[in-house]
Image (tube, rainbow, N blue to C red; front, side, top):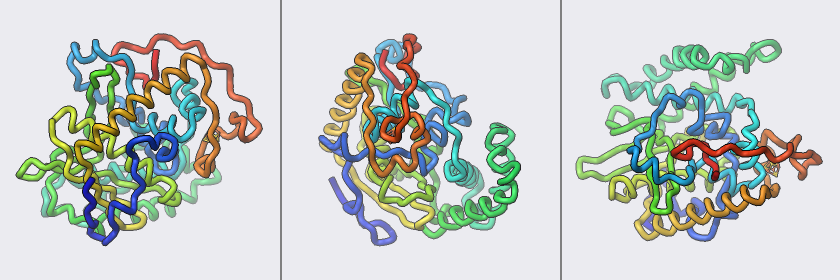
Length: 337
Ligand code: SF4
């Protein structure tokens, strides 16, 4: 592992590692940052149009599928994984999650402009049109600000402006030319496990070095979610390494609320260990599914869980374990057969 000082002086060594043997410790429920079942995860409605990049032959080899969000769910709390992935219980997105979706949309749109036009002013001007576009595509989002909460929309948009403004203190988009944005990346490991996810941004240097960039917009205490953020980036690094044969030179987290960037440099040995851990995690998910046993795991992250009312840790009762139909070819459902 190589540690690099970030532009703001913070080092990647400040981050918890998500490597070998830490399946119990580095998960987090991503419910505060929009990268959740109900937020910006790979199953977000605004991303459903994305198709697979796998060949028919690769798809035929798939025996299960896992995204970083669902892997983190299981590591955080097996019962949370069950609620989201097996029971598929609906979750109403929070205003923090939807703000994350909006800010990501603005930053994606910003990079469609010619470099010289990617100014702070241009980015802020994109906010309201992007909000209109998102609510048109997903009318349920607008319902967050109806009735008693209608007068909160202005303040919420203002907070989104603050995050977009924060982006300009950690990067200068006029000096960047991303290779890919909101890009679906996926691979089928030798074990038949398909790993897939969406990368916020991928930068490629003229020398071919890769940098994976993830924007963090959550309003919750950041330390509660850093482990999950790094797990997610390592997951992407593994997929890129396996598909392109290059270990990304940098994994970059941009915390827009705190206006901080944090860079982390993985190496091949670390990613190989990480791969073994992901496969072991998948085996644990398969065993849990076969036995229908997904115990709750209480932590401070329960504060962000949408399912407390059904959780035994909070006096609730989970619904009966469902009969599981076979997942479709290619294992799209993030769960075992
Ligand atoms: S509230 Fe229950 S289901 Fe949700 S994360 Fe906590 S222990 Fe898991």
